Image (tube, rainbow, N blue to C red):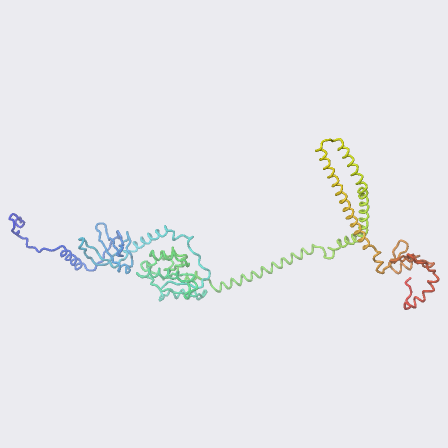
Length: 515
């Protein structure tokens, strides 16, 4: 055996060294063909290890178990067809082909399909995503938007061919018909998550009042199924799109016992698609009945309020005095003051005339002149006793001031006397206006019997003697005849007046005297 590797003779080929020689590229190609031809398309189960997405878009990750690691590659064009995107720590079953990378003497697996290995792994992944989104605050109640009470337009994200959309439309038609916009999407499989995400974002990008109006409410709905069928609604992109929606969103995925990530990030979760339609709109008949009930309550309340106020008004009106009695006391006071007013004016004028006379007595010019002369004499006497010129000048200045003061005093006194004389004249004119003399001047007369004023025919007939006062004098009637007291008039004998009576009666049309 050792002879085969004997190289003691230089320049001679060793025994047994006739095997073919390969280049590095040749041996790498042979290994690649051997791997691909021997294994073909295979399925491998393991836990996802390191995951790296290159700048070019290709995805590199490892599949491992407790002893070995298998490098995997998914090219950029294959990623969109994956039903599950590999995440570190997830147990998966990958399907693809083994191949070798000769440049680094490595082999790997080109993966074109990834499936989660069992429901336990799916639940573990779901719990991991749930904790991550909750830590970011996407589940917080304060960020959820209240649903509109009665939306005008409702957007529905679901499959157009399933029973879900028919159930929703039927329930809306029964409760309160509304306009519905349907955005068709795949509700399971690898296209579910991206299509649902685009639908939510598309509804939010619509312009309010545009040709295709923006909905006031979004319903994301799907029927029940296994967790693998609902997995598209557990994708992170769907949950984030629901959380970022400006339009209030109701999630109705699966049955009441099914729970997905979109249920936590949506504004409201409905147990079923039919329940989502019931949450979206109220019952029209119930709303109409409620409005009628509220209207009836309003009418009853208004009627009761008016009745109570009317009763209160009646109660208060009974405690108030009669309108005519409210003016009795003011009317009596007015009568008393109107009777006292003429005498009060006369008394006021007389009092002011007396006061004026009393004050005018002390303000006569002779008194003021004597006072000024006396002060001037006192001043001249004081000046005679003072010799310095400055004092004399000061005294002369004060003397001039005193003379000016005396002039001003005379002027003020004259002005005050004139003002009081005018006030007295005005009071006298007012007294003349209020006097009964002015009434006599207009053609009236006053009939007296002694000190009493006669105002009726009966009183005149029973009087012993009458005195009639006119504006130009008084005329007395007595049992012996009449005597005139007018100024400048002469007394007329009774016989002449009696003889003149028939002629006067004939001239006046036969009407006799009242007396």
